[in-house]
Length: 166
Image 1 (cartoon, rainbow, N blue to C red):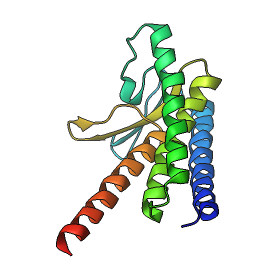
Image 2 (cartoon, helix red, strand yellow; image 1 turned 90 degrees about the vertical axis):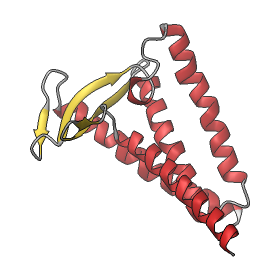
Image 3 (cartoon, rainbow, N blue to C red; image 1 turned 90 degrees about the horizontal axis):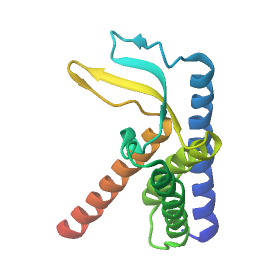
């Protein structure tokens, strides 16, 4: 795939992912409360507004503020810059890999935008439960990151099985 097509595909994934995430967060901020949990589907889906000062699932939340902000703003920013450059310039990447890397970048970028806009935190509002199993509170950007990571795993697995099997 040539550079122009690669960049167009990346831009399309960025636009859709960031738009959906930021729109869902704006709706969550406008309609949800940090004090009230809304439950749907027998409690399997819970909506509650939270401000996540840490990374994914609040990792690093207890770090000193200056260190946490450095890691989650500058560190993540540098990682995302490297990821987008790698994705754009990797001539061997197939369409699935470009989409997957673009989803990881888009989710990370949207959460980074939150940190910049809101002074260090990310808006989270989704929680899933099934019996005694439940997730932490997350957002649509986290879904994009996880979906991209799963796609990368599947694309990599497919590539390895092809080379092994023939």
